[in-house]
Length: 389
Image 1: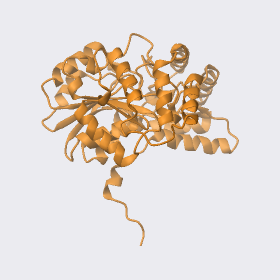
Image 2: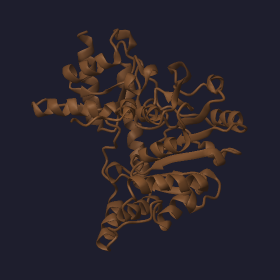
Image 3: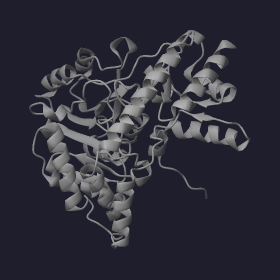
Image 4: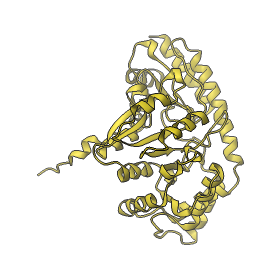
């Protein structure tokens, strides 16, 4: 008899970036040169001081099991960092370390959302939000992010979406895929709305250090919000540690206990040598990180100017992350059709905006985590391919 899948597997989505990457790799295997603007991964290597600290830890024997929530010394460093940057004191027992940031997303939704509960989430937004909400039996309630509002949440519109069934709100700032950022005023107003409501906030702050104008704010810095917020953060984007699979959540202690149970029941723990590398990331020199953000700024400016020079495309300048979200509606093609057209006719891999939700239709996501030379080449290729339409 064949294996029969559980019905819940029908609710689980995918991440289109990896599907587009597979298409691009297949073309490369045929000898085509493809410029990769689809994957949200810094092209810089992990800083050498972090690599060396991980190597030292392995040689010192830190290759055994660790506590499910993480080593106390690693959680203390994270607690100090979060407290210092948000303006309050954090206990290491409020920190849970995981194999990347995604598990915090998964565990938080599984721990808080019952079947039938409503979860408000940004759309367009990271596709795994909606996927896991569905998997847990929750009801996804999209809050549209519109170009005319710089892809920020409209706080009044969000307030109108709240019902007695609302159990969780997901926010992401700086934002993937648009690069938008919620302002201090946005978050202050949101905090006022949520203060007297039994709604858990999942605040995805993974891009907090990749900011070009102003600064990013955490909703936990506002009165009454720490007690109802789970912060999702990690090392992949800031420190180019995507392959290390190192993330963490910061949350009330009682919730941390339950999230830790989910870690125990799934992955057991995060590797000790990885945690030592994470300590070095947060406590070591930060000059290289700042220099890389400046490189991202140069790339952002070039790709935005280049896209806006192409007839039929308009592109807002993002304030954070390393993505642009250009409007391609004038061409009369779906986002999927346009992404495929540029891949096969221009040799440029992008992502269709609809893969980030229905409100992403009519847009593409381009990652500028690539060299200026490749960005220049990509703009030229895109322009030439679109002139043929």
